[in-house]
Image 1: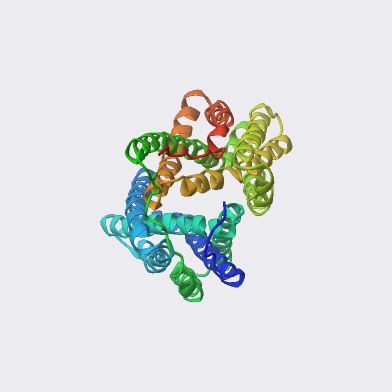
Image 2: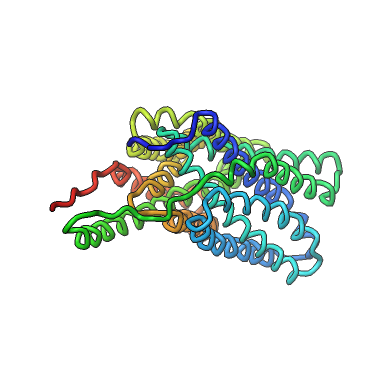
Length: 402
């Protein structure tokens, strides 16, 4: 589709880099936060279940922030929302770890969660706009930059622990890094707008066509939300349970278990930086179809593997297959005729519910049937994604008659 009044190439590059900065900041905070969770638990003298409640509160704040930021992006522009989210993250990252009571930590975590929700939708909506201006797939590279930020945040945390550097220094440093990323990107981010006006059919049959289109789009958005849920449930299963699976099912050492997760994360990161060109050639539906098939093959290898090396190959195949799937769903949502940032917020929110609920579902299944058998659930989820891939095929809009 031709895009009129597209920015000059240099401006497009600046916008892409600015959104890159927002995704790196997002990943940096989440990677650092995950590394410091044991300190939060220790500071609060909290049990595992009490820490779980803190994380649930953070997740609830994120879900609220996503929905609110969808409306804000329509009114003020997705770039402004992404910039506000970066600023909010730089302010809210530090307080939870400095709290000494459960109540104060809950409030601080709620604020951080809202910030996470704001930047999640703002950055993805801005990425959709920049991708539309580029007129070729680039969404996966944005998610690749999030992975880079996550790894960087985790490495900073691990390095600080190894060098006995206090979190009282490390976390403010991470917050400062986020603020620096915002300073260098804010001016360009502010120029990225979001069109809040749904496309409508003109002519004598406008009213009935609009109703029909609205019904079809509603079903498409529900389908996109379901795909996001299943894909992120599968991704979360690997992130949260691959190491434990290696230890409990394959009797791996701690370092071997870490290798299983590293294979998945590394393959996913590599895939995110390479999948865009392939998506341009074969289209989003085939990316989802072939990616789901590769993920299923990887999961089956993990399920059937009697040894760690084969399981690691399975995790790598799964990560590579999944790497391009979620970006295609987000792109399809943002480019659906008549949709805007509010619809994107709902699809992203559906995926985030899977991020929150997935670990608990897999954990319950592991307790009931064993951790290896628990992976049958994500296998089923990816089969559904495989057979539903045609949902992402671009559809021609009906032509109004006069």
